[in-house]
Image (spheres, rainbow, N blue to C red):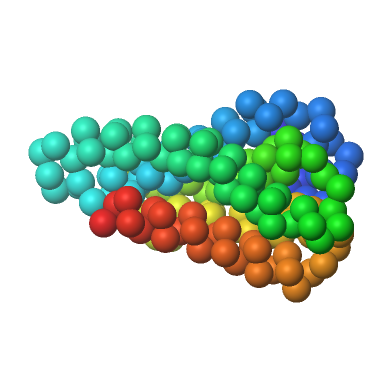
Length: 175
């Protein structure tokens, strides 16, 4: 648990010293749960007044699990392929684990969002879900810098594209 909170303050240290010991499946579970809760709260927001709203919310939650695990793994692979010629020496498994673990802040935000949604009746997908995905860009940028041999400009471009793809994908799915 402390490792997950360290991603807020020192993601580079986590990636350099601890990432190799974290199984890829656990990392993908973290990103999967983050997106599952994000999509769930979106479904709760949208379906609040619909009698079938709970079914819709749960279906979105399951879809979010797929996006957060398979989608993040695919996104990490694409970013790794673009970064590979730029001098980084991280293997693909490292990239997948780092990308997936980058969504630990999103998991925290999404969990708080679902709690606020259920307990207070707030619409939370924008305030908590999108904010969580944006918080994940910090650790993701650190991971991409490691993958590009510390090329900050290129890393910012790749991280921006990756973040935009995840948010645009969410917007297209829920619209």
